[in-house]
Image 1: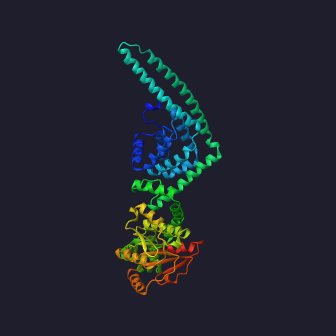
Image 2: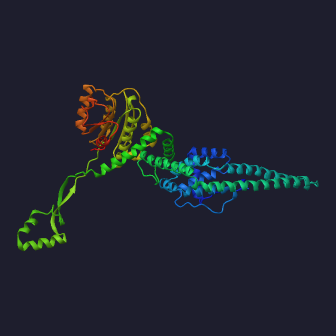
Image 3: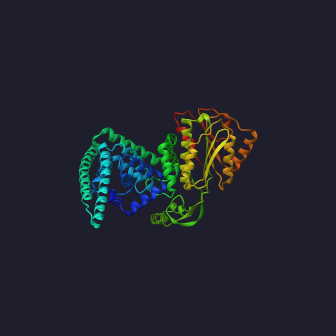
Amino acid sequence: MYGHRPALTVLNTDKYDRRLYASLKEKTDKLSEMEERLSQQDMPLASIMLQDLWAGLYKSQPQVLEDVPPELKVNQQIMKEAMKLPKFEELRQFTMLDELAAALGAVVLGEKIVDLIPNSAHDAFRIMQKTQKFIDQAAGLLEMATMVERRGQDGSDYRDCAVSLQQRAERMMQEAQKRLDMAVQAIEQWQKNKALKCNLKMAMEDLREKLEAASLFWGTTPGVPRSINSKEKFQLAQRLVKEAKLWEIAKLAGRMTRIALHKRRTKVRKIPQVITGINQGNDLSRILPAELHLLAHPLARKDFLRRFIEGKLLQYELQGRESLGRGPIIACIDSSGSMQGNREIWAKAVALALFQVAVKEKRTFAWINFSTRACSKFQCADPRQVNPLQLAEAAVEDCGGGTNYEYPLEEALQIINQSAFNKADIIFITDGQCKASDQFLQRFLTAKHEKEFCVHTILINSEAPGAHIFSDIVVYYDGKDDSMALQSAFSLD
């Protein structure tokens, strides 16, 4: 019986796969919790099914084994049917060789699949558990018979009872096998059940989107190994699955990030160059005047053309000046009571997209949520080493209250003053109307001139004349067309 066998599988897993999965269980409580839930659903081999789901998502070439014990027939058919779905292969683009993403996928799909297991399978597992008890009892009786017979006594009663239990166990196993066959046949019909198939597809698509969105919080591409703490990655991905607000922010930020990075790629930067010497070549824009004068002489023209073809004309050697580093990107997000809802989600999606720009351009990034005070500040000198959970906390934080411009701008000034580079960018998003004091504005504008930073302000359904005084650019967002607002937010120095 299955109770006496070592750990089994229905996929082509090896020792490395099993060690990696065991290590993941120690880091992530959810795998153990899901195993417990499956066990409560009369799935005695729940750990094997969950591990196989994980391996199917993780391994580069997973294959379902054909020769498996009877008690694994249900697991085998589940994996066969799941791996036939096109969405399963699409999902693997984000989980293959990424053990944490595969673990989250196993948990999410396990929750769906447990509800799809036929009742006949549960009946079979219950019968098999009872059968195992009878087999154990029969073994105990046979042992007792042997002990009695060694003392010269009659052990036939024990043996008869053991035989009776074994026969009963055999009949029960036959019944269990029938029910397992029924379960396997029912699972084979998954592909024909449009509603069931659609539900699985939707679950996989939703999971794929969340895994893709999760990468926004650490600035790497899904489907490749990462150096971010494994437990943090798993916790973040779980939050995206469970927290609607965080998911909405990440989903919107995905679109904005594509816009931002495209805009940054297409922005032409003119790098000043200086003459460092003379070399040979055929770049007409750099040819020495003395060489160009040869074109005016018929006899020298042929020599000029020959050396042009050979790349041997004398020309200036130019070298671009080393570009100076740029200061921080600072997102100041109004998180007051009036911003709650779509305004807050939009504004924080912009901040998350700006984080991706900072990752790409290796700039310090800061995120300041504010209301009547600067209620939180998230800052990282190297966005590539960000703690994704802290970034997620900034995204979901609600400050409440009213609006005060001075607190976030003061925090931004401190960050800029700590930077070794000028040319920082502050993106200030608010729907509030307030006015900073003249004393503060004078100090802020003086620092703005000295440190050469820019303030891009986006006003959401608000005029807010007080913001114009400290802003270089002010655009309005009416909650519908955000093209101009995004163009301003991502037009950084």
